[in-house]
Length: 405
Figure 1 (tube, one colour):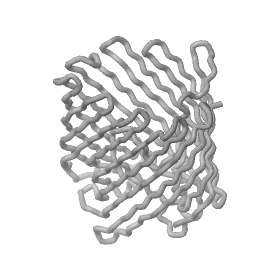
Figure 2: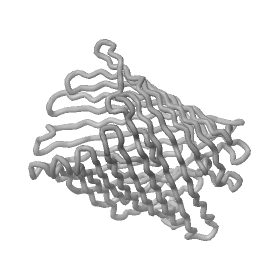
Figure 3: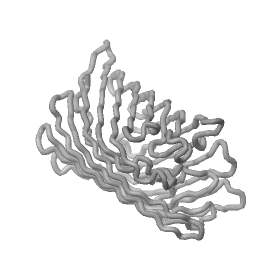
Figure 4: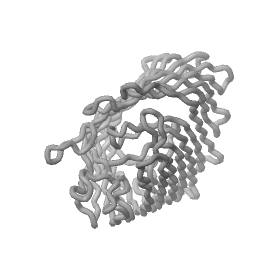
């Protein structure tokens, strides 16, 4: 099983793939007293020309299939003043007509609490648990085409100290993600892993719409079933965040990142990294976003290889409403990185080009139709003896219908 690493981008942009579905702007809901209940159903029908793109098995290369993807969710939301409380249950079933062994169903439950204790203290807490699958991978090559299955538990807490308009304020944050893989024929379907993040950002407002900032954060990967295979990545960043106008916001951070390994005898290393992002609203119905980051990544495919990635990722997107009912979205992401051993030896050079377009047609306030096309091209070049490049290309075409019941 091989995963595609994703560098932290830092701005809310479209991630892997592009769905043409726009969230229903004002989904219909049912009032249960102070609680709003919103059911939602999404049906995707399309074609995928490389459904096992994460597999290194030659016999699975470029296998294509018609895809049926049905998602259903229900959200319970209560709001009191500035405080919001949300619980959401969701299920997703994906069916491949040509490779039915790869079918899977995900089920998850998430909760979010956004609570303002007072004007100077606020909490944002998110918790989640569910049964998920590694789409695009297989349990055992061509022998077992099932997608590896795991239980995932997540949590994230942000505590804000100081008024939003105060000269000095700070955000403290922490996150947790645990993946426990199920067994098949007595063997684990994947490598159990735990990632954690801790950090804080201090802001100093030296201009009416501009803050200077200092940020320290650490990300940690542990393979709970394998000794001496994890990493710690610590970042020390300084920069600015701004809201130059109502139409333009952004941030820029620059500093040093350090990687330390659990592998015995391997020291730490460091290099200069950054995070930059900007949003521009030229018109009220048009949004352009840009982000770029240079960072270490955690290659989570095979802990026995004790590898990690190091590189740069850049993404740009444009969403535009042509009429009150019709809108389009375009995204492009480029990643350029190296796969390295714990010692820092370069093994492969990796590049990823990910381009997507979509159109959305809002038939009613509660119903949307869409079409999307997403193309991905991953190239690999061996930099060390014994390394085998394993790139791929993929195209996904999808028709979508979304209904808020």
